[in-house]
Length: 355
Image 1 (cartoon, helix red, strand yellow):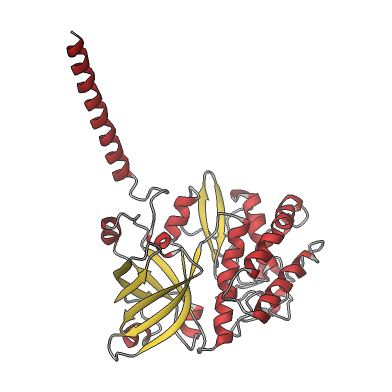
Image 2: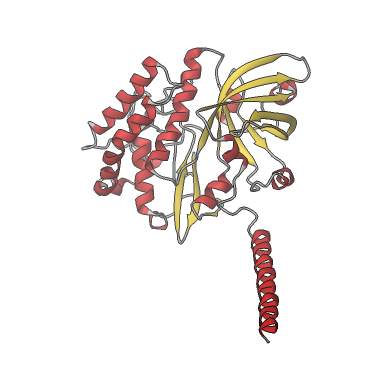
């Protein structure tokens, strides 16, 4: 009788085990991108500067700045375990302003095969934006790239509702000529992965949305950050340089593209005179105007983060002397003037710089 009980329990345990496996399989099928599953970005993101090789036909990819074609390329790097990784990918030009205005390399999007990612046990977040050196090669212009990369890192300190970035040393190999060149850049996390991290959903065409549709706390944090770094090149109403996503029943806006900001001070940055500013280092508040009188809680958060923001700049080994001092000085100047936020002269009539 005792043996029979034990046998019955064994069969029951087997059924429970099989049922559990079915549940896991069904969950994996329904959720191909669970948050706890690593992505290709996570594999790349493990040290301050990651050296990668990118082999492609340079003329084919960069020859026509208006092309929307995708081109074959090979990306290689060494991961944090010391293993060499090689990925057959496709690359295509992206962006509007930098695509046509940069006299060096236009920005790219790196497209990975979702099947290849799944075969490697990675989530299917397969699109990474690559920001290249926009102007001709020089140490100073590399520093501008580091400064924009750090703008993303500073916002990471304020909130997790932000794009993560990874700085790269890129060895470009031209498959047609056999020539090579070294450039620097950084990749930006796939927007789909960001949405998964913050439990957000994709929304389309969010233009001129009423203020009450947004998470007011999040929008205040984002607007204050843009003011702190001196970025005049964004707009919630025009959905410009912000990625708007739905989180619960509220919209949130995730900023990107900080090269026109005063903390970066790119040589190609334009000044919009209608904003009432005369210098790339002038600040103007482009958030909701009625927020200016009610941001005490959010400003306290920035005050609490002040030391970590400065530490992020100081600890970036890629940022050199003068650039480090300038960035820290610019951040400190924000804290010296938070009693008054400068508003644009003609807010409702101001076009965005990229339009």
